[in-house]
Image 1 (cartoon, rainbow, N blue to C red):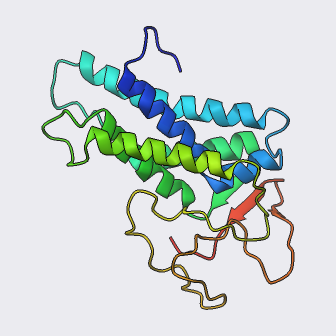
Image 2 (image 1 turned 180 degrees about the horizontal axis):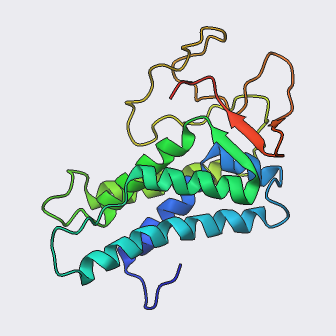
Length: 214
């Protein structure tokens, strides 16, 4: 990140959470694993976390320096989603269409609200301690998943659908072609019982899609 002074403990905690949450993003893990972003794919993932943290820092800095209290200080989940999708397309040549970036954006904004905005009287009821527990939970899951390979043609049972809260679990099988258990995450790339290589469109972009309707 582009911090000019020593970051606060809360900001460090938030950055840890962003790094861990990105490491749990199966789509990005697959892209790094398969080196879709080239030999520096792991470094790109770390850089992505810095980009996300900087978005919140810059918004907070502008708010603190503004004279009006009406300045919008919130980074919206859609902002995070759009940024991540753009980076995946630019740096990894992957078009993500499984809805996972939307969930990730919501989780990161909720983490910011818990860790940074919890002292704000107008903030949500999420507490700083809950945010800290969530970071520790994500980091624990990252540690336990080390060494596990993800198959591009096959679903891994990772909680990509609502990590913070379970309000997005409906509608996973609207097509009716491939019945799925309710607790399964959306496929990164649809499988048809046999192995399928990742689809590549006419522009050379890898497609990461899902049967899930957004």
